[in-house]
Length: 105
Image (tube, rainbow, N blue to C red; front, side, top):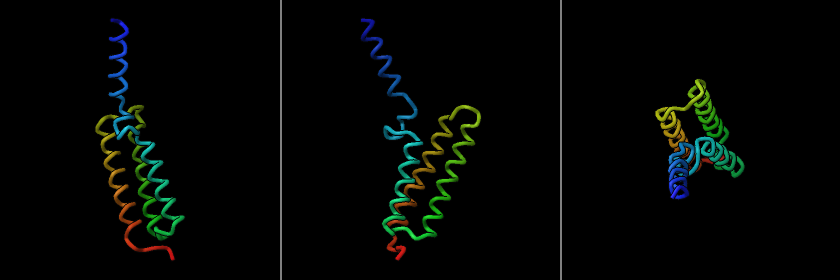
């Protein structure tokens, strides 16, 4: 009986972990994924220099905001949602820039 209760508690704790709330990945994972998408766009020529510069600046602003939010030692649910919203917006921007039929060549 104690084993079942313990496994239920551990299971609930894992499911409630905020880092896993972003589609089973955390904010840092999303930032790394976006950075990789930008670099892939640069390598393939899908992004012009100016597009890449703007997207990199957007990623830098998100990192600054995250540092600011974490400065007090914790990330509140409201701050986490704000970062997720910024990352979603950034993801859409990357997609639009990579598929706008402008290329480096």
